[in-house]
Every structure is written in C-alpha cells, then in structure tokens.
Image (cartoon, rainbow, N blue to C red; front, side, top):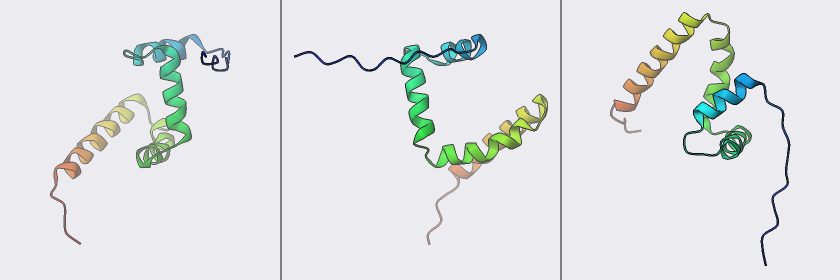
Length: 88
C-alpha cells in the first residue's frame, strides 16, 4: 500500500525572498528548506528566543551598525563559549 501524498499548499513569495531561500537552501530542496524554517519558528529553542529579542534592536540600526553589532555579539559569544565552566 502506497503512502498518501502530503497535502499541497500553494504559496506566493516575493522574488527577493525566494532568491534568498534558494541561496540558503544548500542541498535541501526549496520545499524542505521552507518546512525546516517553519518548524524551527514554531518550536523555538533558547537561541530562537535570543534572536527574537535581538531582531527589533538590529532592525533599528543602520547597515554598518548592524554589521558591527553582529560582529561584537559573535565575538562575545565565542569568548563565553571558550571560558571554563564554573562549578556551582
């Protein structure tokens, strides 16, 4: 007995968004990329919660400030990740 086809859902995307998804998809199909992104957004982990807090702040900055903020945050997180765990 064959599996039933999953339900189809037709979606119109702006050209720019589709191009970004195509560029980011790697080896995934475009459909799989969209499904994985939707699943992550509907079941957020701690990193997604941090991103949700930072997103409005980053959106309020101009491009150069946004780039600098991302660089500094990445550097800070790298330092924190390398520091030895403290016993409690």
